[in-house]
Amino acid sequence: MSSSRPVRRPTENTALHNSRRPCPPADQVRNLLTVAHATGDRYGARHFGHMLARALGQTRASQ
Image (tube, rainbow, N blue to C red; front, side):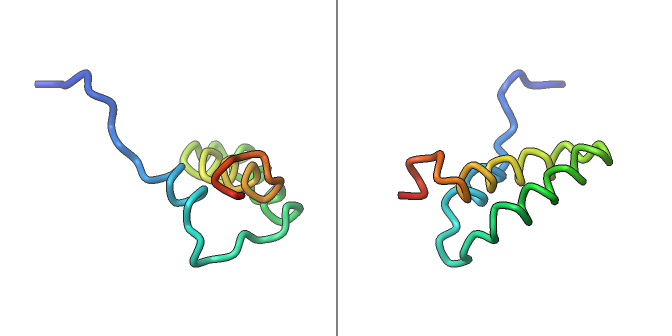
């Protein structure tokens, strides 16, 4: 039996709201995002995409 409910994954919350760990430099996150895309790692691409947004200050969570 399958469900149409979306699966909750902590990717965005971990990347955006983890204030205990400082965000790495944007160029390092960009490189990790590039590698994730090149290897087809969808989870990594989402995670590093949100981390890059945080590193660049493009989210309200980083304020």
